[in-house]
Amino acid sequence: MPAWEKNIRKVIPYTPGEQPSRPNMIKLNTNENPYPPSPAVTKALQELTPDSLRRYPDPGAEALVQALADYYKVSSQQVFAGVGSDDVLAMSFLAFFNSKKPILFPDITYSFYDVWADLFRIPYECPPLDEEFQIRTGDYLRECGGIVLPNPNAPTGLEKSLEELEKIIAANPEVIVIIDEAYIDFGGDSALLLLPKYENLLVVQTFSKSRSLAGMRIGYAIGNEKLIKYLNDAKYSFNSYTMSAAALAAGTAAVGDDTYFKETLQKIINTRERTKKELHRLGFSFPDSKSNFIFATHPKCPAGKLFEALKQADIYVRYFHKPRIDNYLRISIGTDAQMDELIRFLEHYLGESL
Image (cartoon, rainbow, N blue to C red):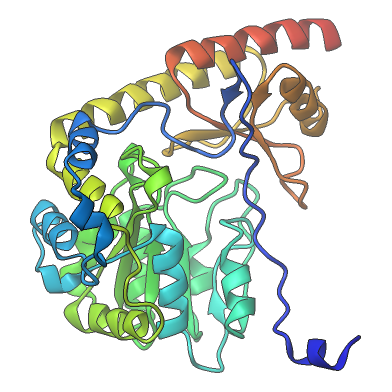
């Protein structure tokens, strides 16, 4: 090893889902929204002026922050915006998890959590989900350096009730509890309802899934004013101009079109529930997802084999070659037509292979 390499910080990076670009493919592997963003977003982007691109964007993201504050009926001082929820979460790890005690997050969950912990030299422990992939409340009622809980969880899609989440938050008043709600709009109850009671709670959400803006990278956190100030202090010590002018315009416009937002959500929820019935009919089992994906397994067809067969047919789903979940596929919810094509393929494939 060269001498200069000895002082490099080495981590095992996060592995994102494939981003194939093939004609007529069905892409159900990265939990993207199958529908376009609100027409108001297109209009806002078309109205961007040359000056808005020539100049630095607003470092405080004030228009977007105010739109989110108005939408959720909180103070603008309670809102932090960043480049996708990944940026917001990474900044939160950096700002809030600085004790020598381990932070806690589940063993089966979003696989960026341990990457950030390793990057920032944060000790961590991963309490295992139970046999039904549920987060066990009792595992988080103990001394720690902080807690991160996705709700609904990924890749399982399972929601934890607000009552159980509150037990965890109330039992840990000396540390920050982050609830990562990337999928909350697809049927769950948001922990935002608990914010008035707990100053140690931070709720993180994203525009990537429910608002069809994964390509714009917009995320945000809502908490008490002191927590948001600490986040902003970390941001301005790291990178002042985090969000582009285009992202700010798109995000602000998306928040303003609540009718389109709710109509699109309902279409995805309806398709998800219909797809559950079809998958059950074909012999699949899965947790009761409250997200925009289904985490499915078949008793007679290995997930790895099915993953490759789907890929050969230009249908992309997500396969995790990891303990406990290596016989499951995470299937994002697409349009009705896309899910119908998936079901037709599975009917044919299972009929031939079983």
